Image 1 (cartoon, each protein chain N blue to C red):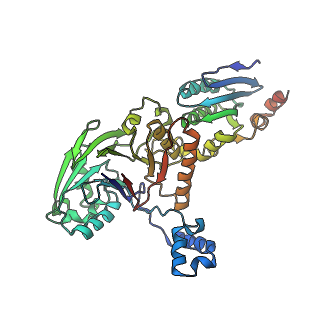
Image 2: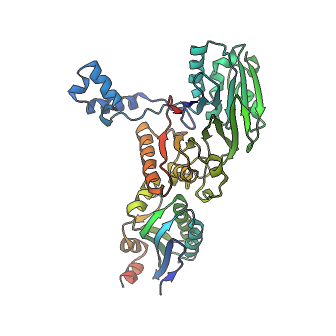
Image 3: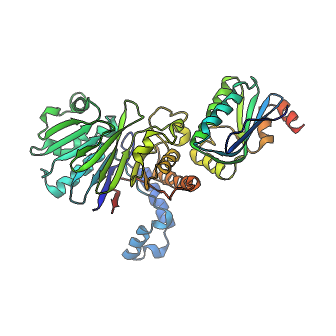
Length: 132
Length: 323
């Protein structure tokens, strides 16, 4: 499936499905000017994740995130769980990793090092499809 | 004209005395950090302590609950909240002015949760004829709240026995009130049963007391009324009881905020000095110091084009001066 682009100003967002795993990649910044849009779009992607599968949110290319952005991740995780799936966040680095640590979101969300590890935590089928 | 802010109680929820094991742990850390030259003479000991015991002496935050005084030195004064810190304040007043204060007491009440009212039964001036106490609140049941606490089955002395003259005043949020020479503007805060913050201004200085407030991340937008209320204040006294993760998950709707949200709001409002308050009783002094340090890092990250924001943690006995 070709990646779907759901970008908004200052934030680029794309998603691609691998077996029962939806991989969402973010780049840019999530701040108070675009967090509502981010929450809506990520929530929509989380809403139809396959039961028994899951969603990975890759933050490797994300430069900045505020409290509203963190809340958006938490809301998306709730939707995925409600649908019987699992959500994993990966690619924390730099400022984003610091914000996660200070806000203690590292202990609130499931965090993996990179997309390989994160997709593997969803299912073997997803890991196989991702490695292609 | 100088304006001072004195913190008589800074803890949230319940008083938090230091227990023996914690005291011994601190003493052990200090002694382990000391070099022989640090303790060779009384002067060396003084210097060792003043320099923070080589990093082994954290801030001593104290354990009394909410009570803050905004005042001029030996001039007009406002007290905010009757937490257990009010007992310390009363002791100081009686030591310096005698049992009968020549000036009435003026006290703003944010709300009546226990930690903000528990100091009143131990506020000695209330028992002494000749003292006058004015209590201001945006809650119309203010007198009932004080009477209910001050009597059976919670307390042995009925309210009507108090010898002082006590007046209750209802004030309105969103309006400026002239109280004892200060301009006071209350603002409703998101907290169970409603709490009110107070923007206090005098002589060109502004102090905002905004304890007991839950700012959910979705509220934090440029048109959030709170941001206008705190805008360009010299000091913002902010409830940072929880981590952001706690405040958005297991402790959501418990009525308190985090250091991260405090920095975000203070930057949006161009506040000069953000002071954390209503400290979590589960947190020891070392953790509270970490929370302040982490907030300073968040401020660096999020500052952008804003001017630098000073970030501190209030402790019992802290006095800040605005010149």
